[in-house]
Image (cartoon, rainbow, N blue to C red):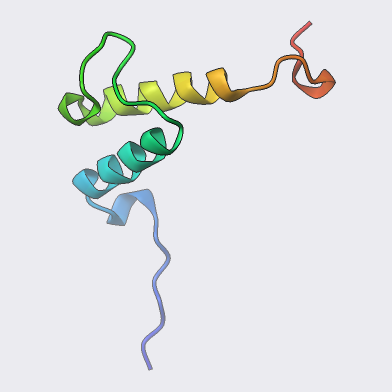
Length: 69
C-alpha cells in the first residue's frame, strides 16, 4: 500500500508554485503589479512580493486586533 506523501515547497516545481500564487493574486482581484506589469510576466520572487502587498491591503486596520498603535 502506498502512502500519500507530504506536499512541501521542496517537492513542488517552481513553475507550479508560481501558478498557485498567480491564482491567489487573481482571487484577491490583483491583475497587475504595483508597477503596472502583467502578473504573468513577473518572476516568482516578484509574485511573492505582490502577495505580501495584497495581503496588507486586505487587512482591516480599523479592527482593534489589527491596529499597530
